Image (cartoon, rainbow, N blue to C red; front, side):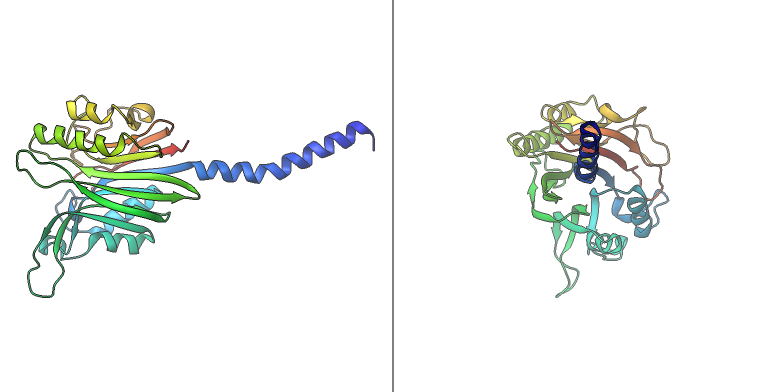
Amino acid sequence: MCARSALALVLMLISMAAAPTSSAAAARQTLTVLTYNIHHGAGADDDLALDRVARVVKDSGADVIGLQEVDRHYDARSDFVDQAAWLAKRLGMHVVYGANLSLDPPRSGAPRRQYGTAILSRFPVTEAHNTRLPRPRDGEQRGLLEADINVEGTAVRVLTTHLEHTSQTERLAQAEAINGVIEDSSRPTVLVGDLNATPGAREVGVLTRHLGDAWRAAGEGAGYTFDARSPHKRIDYVLTSSGIAARQAEVIDSDASDHLPVSVDITLP
């Protein structure tokens, strides 16, 4: 074999050996994130059908999902079901829950009646906790649910929230509190949720001091998410820290809730 042929063979073998590793690395760096206000499982028709929510999430192919308005043994409106656990079991995912309202049970020995947010993940959750957000006007208690997720060796910080819908004063205070949690993070960070504010609002501006709006980077059109039957404003967001690239963003058409979910494909740094 001549020297040139030998060199070509060596280069070909090196390329073949490297290809699977490169493909695996690319796969590890890509994540599909979904945010979805599920309206305690009641659809746009106001009928309770949590299985519709499960189908939307499954069909989206999302790896990590931030949910808002999630009941846990709350009351008859959701048949006293632990909705976070039900969805996790149906979808075969890990789950963490943040109770922002926790009320006495209807009878002795029954679980507490809770309402809040949840995070579902295909990947293991290594740590999670819920932070109660301020409510200077005595509005409904809101929270910031945080989960550290191990994406095949890469630590990703995922948070979901649902800001107050009746008061901008409260939303501003809540946004500042969220900034206090995320601004010193060196980990890749994704914040999703129902901010109850349109893109030009001051509270959205507070959050985008440190995070980028994935829809602006990768979405097409207005990105309206509310209400599901006649979308006319964008109030549901996926926000990402520096170094995370949003590749594609989509609002999913569905009547499983009064909100439309937003799906974003991101590449981790």
